[in-house]
Image (cartoon, rainbow, N blue to C red):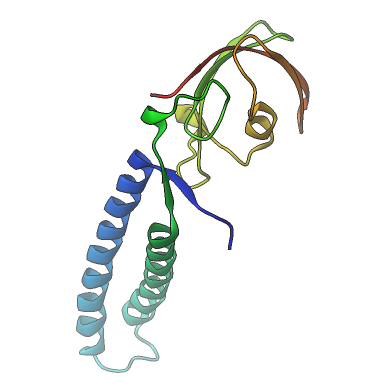
Length: 156
């Protein structure tokens, strides 16, 4: 299994999601018991649906528990590195369009491109790893080649 790196915030969010899933599992157990009391289980759509949903929730709980147990916490605030690494917030200029881009490199579990958080395993992030402010890099992306100038590397 690949190593799992999470920021402290990502770890806490994952713990909150696990607690929510555990509550959902308990609610589904009640729903299953109520459906079981209605009689014939083969034709009881409520029972079948609740069992299927419970299986999915249990699978997700297992995944989350494994990730939380094996995760390595990256303290981005303590990072003194000038290079782009996991947890870095990077400000760069797209030399093709002139646009300024700001992204935070996160684990795949924390990635949310709409909120400016990209997975460290994405092609863009892979091309940025190790780059320092002031450097220009050429990154080959599925959408084509990008020329990016790193303006700032921060760890918040």
